Length: 556
Image (cartoon, rainbow, N blue to C red; front, side):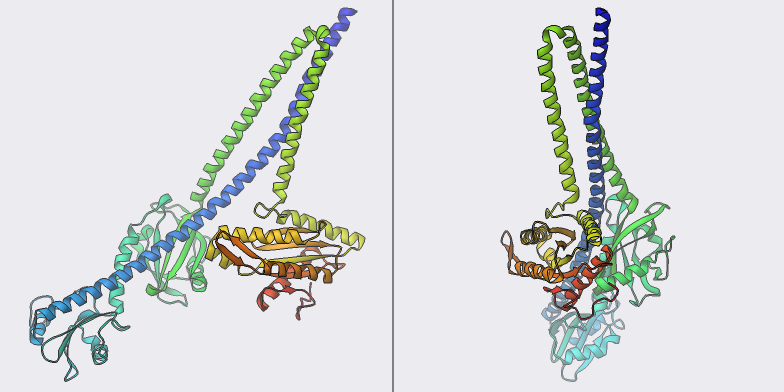
């Protein structure tokens, strides 16, 4: 009986110990695995967003650099030909050639040499003018005689709108020699140089620059000509149409033209084949209008190339996740082996070591509780991250959305009042454009602090999106909501925000709406948004509501 009892106790002891080990392992592992998986999934999503954002920014910066290079080439060509004309005029004057010498040297009916000065394009040439008779004695550009006479009679000594290259020198008697070029001729030279450079440009992932020359800004067939396209070398100089569609029906040329006409630049997507391949995939493009040449300068990247970068980064995250899980499993295995060894040791010495064993169990229990508390703290931190805006520390849109849904349901059940205040920072884009996004973030955090300091403990403030903030004001009427909104507006207006040496005075426009029975959550948001943008259109830096808006929306 004694042996049987000892055997039962031993079995109960080991079974209980192993079950306890399994339970502890599961209790520790499952929440940990879930939280780590969520964290990695969030990192993958953020990585995808960041990669797409970075690539869009790279496309824009690339086109802007090319446009700047084209402008520099154009200015260089103008300066080069003006300097060359002045030098040639000075040479002709220094040689003290007579009018007859110049005409004999350049007139194709007299000389066998190339008659045109700097013979590149039509529109670049030389003219001899007699001041006394006010007549042009000779020029190799007969079509430009009327304009040349106007410039000579006007006494022009430098470039004009008609002749951006214009150099003059006196000859014998009353004669004057001029070397000139019209805008179209110089632009043609600048275009050819720019085309040669653009055609040679190549970037990673088989990216390149292409140019469409606009002929008709109204669109339609033949609205533009393909100037440069490294992927379609044989199809350059082909006429384009805004009615042309890609394989899935996207009117890419129409979207491109409308975008650059409205904003000067545009992002758009369409289906296009990859360079050196017949594979057709979605392509993200960026286009910018260079008006002096009527060129639309474009670049792009295939979406699947960006997705391959996302996949590589995701694979890296997954490897890190698996390594972390593997390390965790090794730690659990080592702890389990140690635990089993301790069980065997304690079982053998149970009688003499019972008190020590109990004390050790208590220590292990405290350690486990400490680990569990760490997991609980980590879980609470994850909840805080999930429901807080990382920049301002306010509730994020998701958290405020849930709060609003709960408050609407509670108000419908209990007949309570509350207000919604929707605010937007005025001219925030200009802050980002002028001082950069880091300064813009400083402004967002400063205004968030103002909201946090001026609302009641029971109220909630959130960053609703971009530069928009939304405040839930509990147990308040429209009048009380307007008072809070005006306080926020005045406080922001009177506060100077500093980012280092940069001082910024910001203002906000606010829309206030009061909950009324029958109103849904969506209708409250739409109404607040209506009042906000009514204030934006009227004057900005104001508070708008049904009481301050003459044409309140009837359906809200």
